[in-house]
Image (cartoon, rainbow, N blue to C red; front, side):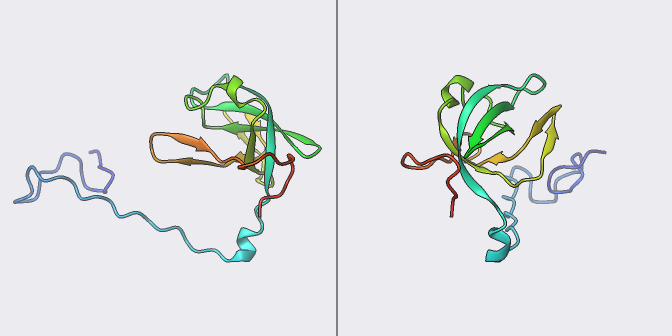
Length: 138
């Protein structure tokens, strides 16, 4: 038997008097509060995108070579379909650089870019003015 997202059996009959009514809107779960000390452990920096290409083993991922100060890194980002790789080259983005490395579909990712999404669009977070790559986000 399958189960719907609310945890009810998907093929169970509707409760009496509820036929034709819309499903209740799920209540968003609030993330746990963290203190400043925990937040300050994130190393957020400005990075410049040096290269961007499609991930060879995933339809929604791009591989980005970024420069953060004197260091070059590769990150894997789930922004394919929202950005063309060539349009990303030269952009300054915000990244978490002290994230533990991860293998994502056979490619190593050494950080994470920051982006916002409303469920449809994905928008990269970028400095409002030109600033050196490697600059710390506070």
